[in-house]
Image (cartoon, rainbow, N blue to C red):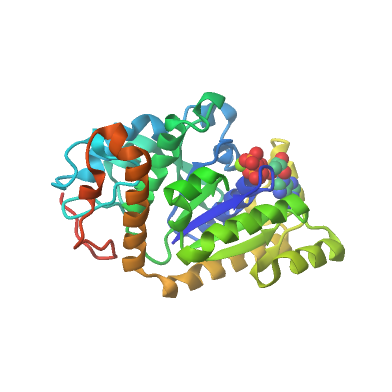
Length: 326
Ligand SMILES: Nc1ncnc2c1ncn2[C@@H]1O[C@H](COP(=O)(O)OP(=O)(O)OP(=O)(O)O)[C@@H](O)[C@H]1O
Ligand SMILES: [Mg+2]
């Protein structure tokens, strides 16, 4: 199951992603955690020391390796150089699984020990101001999009992505790559306006979007969110002393998380699991082609000097059980 946490800066995306990853890992589920946010904090939220977090390998720096592995012997993709972030898999491409060893995980993922479990962690790499709005920024989140577009995941295994709600994810199609998207919103007008924008983009693509209210204190906050987002409000989380203790560098054991927060995390999992029935691999594959054509026309063809539309394999559908060359 592919799950995104999005929302306004500072809303609690990283905090809630990390709690959800801990929850899944404690339940014994295979989890890949991906930090795709501009502010790379997921490693620390999962308990890494600052020095360990900064030493994590950046997916954005390993794109040639990722591309070369994924294209396999797909005859429609002539070289890693002509592979852009939206290049879809086809016959001959190598696909990825949540629980396996492969060169992409070897190069980009690190095992993080959590109370009662473990998760694989991958990070896009730090963004600098110079990256924003230019091609390098695209290529950094592009590594995550390539990963998701080549992933054949099943139920009871999870990829959790900590992501911004920025316009880049809309241009590339990244926002359509998830079984469910949790939009983290504080009970404020700004928090809710990000929800509206997301909902607007999501509408035509069958994106399952649910709101997780964060830092919700009391009835007034709850009433506000209910009034603003209605049925899309899945659950709310209040101020967490556990989170605060962790921020002080004194992480309690995960089992000491508040009952209400544990309940909220179980609800998130139930909501995510329920989307398995809605899966439509054909639509998922068609959307890849849609965004690939869009990106090819707007910058990709020019950048690579190739006709990237020809990379689309019309007979290929990504799905569970599809085989991949060794
Ligand atoms: N429920 C909570 N209880 C206590 N503190 C919280 C809670 N949610 C978030 N925080 C705190 O609020 C701050 C912002 O949260 P967080 O870093 O998760 O937000 P973010 O959306 O990932 O931000 P950014 O956009 O900067 O990546 C952090 O210091 C975090 O510890
Ligand atoms: Mg964050």
